[in-house]
Image 1 (cartoon, one colour):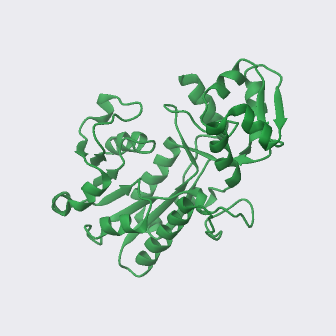
Image 2 (tube, rainbow, N blue to C red):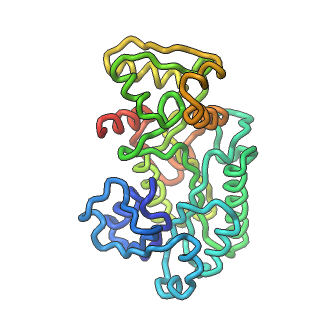
Image 3 (cartoon, one colour):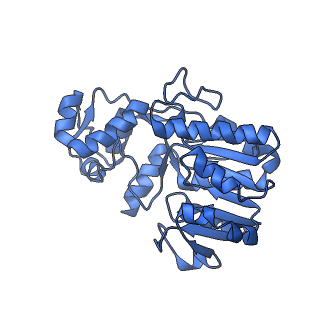
Length: 306
């Protein structure tokens, strides 16, 4: 099949594009500038058709879209309904459109674990807009006007960039401090949660959706590791993994923020205020997905790579 990947060199595309090429598809990779993909290896990207353009520039090029005549479009970087609508206007109605959402669309949790039937009730604009896009695309699909699938990932992680750490931010020193047995400070009692997804597993979900359109069209799927984890559990397990007794200091939010600094504290607050706990049961059952990576697998893989 002819498949367009928009956002081809980011956290998802860096895994997805080589996997689609291995499947034998003709892949058109849309990327801004000439940014190299994470973990780029020339042989794995051989045969890809590069399109260097911003998302807006590409979507406005209706002639090029008509010439490509894709079977599938994987839209990894859409954040507003208007962006989606502008692209769909240039696509044949038979195209399978796969859009990447976010588990942050389920922000105010009414029950746990959160599944795809949970109300979409995000407070922040990011989650709100992702939820509006899902509703819009599924409505078009239910009316027979489009063929859409939505995938809602957790914290997108891979071995080539820093995953959200057990402190809830992106400071790589947290990993080295735990590995060396140094003390780590956690906010409150460390009972807030994180829920990652490895880009390899996310790629498998997208490919399964492409292979099984009779199942995936008209569906939204949560893409997350088998289980969420608390900050405390992640931290304790990592200390033990590296042969140390846990050295965790629990602090009030004010003390925590003063210790880690404004930038890291802001990222932590953003994540622990969501504290996602989701279930990937639907995608496992409907698409036959076997998730390879637990959260700890994700973190250890990154640490082994650095």
